[in-house]
Length: 87
Image (cartoon, rainbow, N blue to C red; front, side):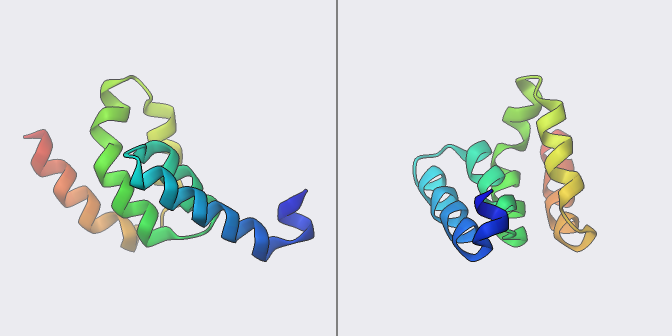
């Protein structure tokens, strides 16, 4: 409801939450809130930090859901780094 009623406040609250989670090393939550705040570049940067943990912990659905929300331009640098880490 907050998102519909006061979208600016909703976005700001999510952005503040995203930064709080990132400061505490809770990257998955930081990504989720950055996406809710429509901070795509920030979400992509933080996704890079937690991708392997998400996949190793069998949270593939979370990971794929986040990846689908990112535009292709945001994924290019991330995929390059991710593929290097996998090899």
